[in-house]
Each structure stands twice: as C-alpha cells, then as structure tokens.
Amino acid sequence: MTMGPKIRLITTVTCPVCDFPAQEAMPVGESIQYYQCMECGSLLTPEPGDCCVFCSYGDVRCPDAQRTEGPVPE
Image 1 (cartoon, rainbow, N blue to C red):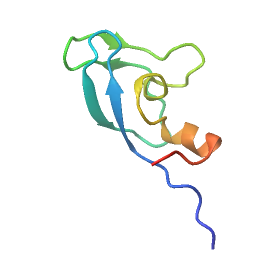
Image 2 (cartoon, rainbow, N blue to C red):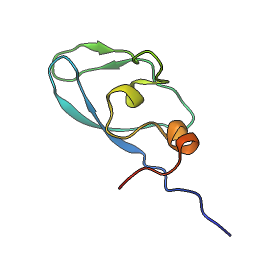
Image 3 (cartoon, one colour):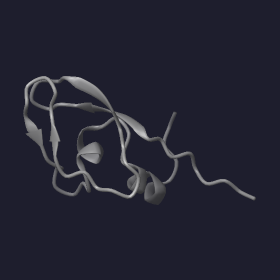
C-alpha cells in the first residue's frame, strides 16, 4: 500500500498589517474565508486567486491545496 504525501495541518498565519505571527490548526475539507488577527484585529480575506486565508497568509497552504499541488517541503 502506497501512502500519499504527508499533509501538514499546522500553519503560521502572518498578518500583512502588523506582521503578527499566529500558529493555527487548519481544518480538513473546509475553506476559511475570514481570519481576524489576534494582535491588531484586522479581518483578513484571501488574496485574489487563493482559496482561503491559509493559502494567502500561512507558511503552509491549506490541506486541500496540498493534496492538489503535491507534497510540501518540511
């Protein structure tokens, strides 16, 4: 039995307004469209072309994007 690429479920979201980094768990099969920065309160939404806030502001893309784009670097 062959295992697929390891899907990472933790990302660090960095606010583009204040640069505050926050470690977050990403849900599987759910696209998160809004994220509020814990430091400055800014409401983040995905950049054009991205499916969710994790793909726009996280250091690891969301689980769905990881599945379609292949393995992610460790």
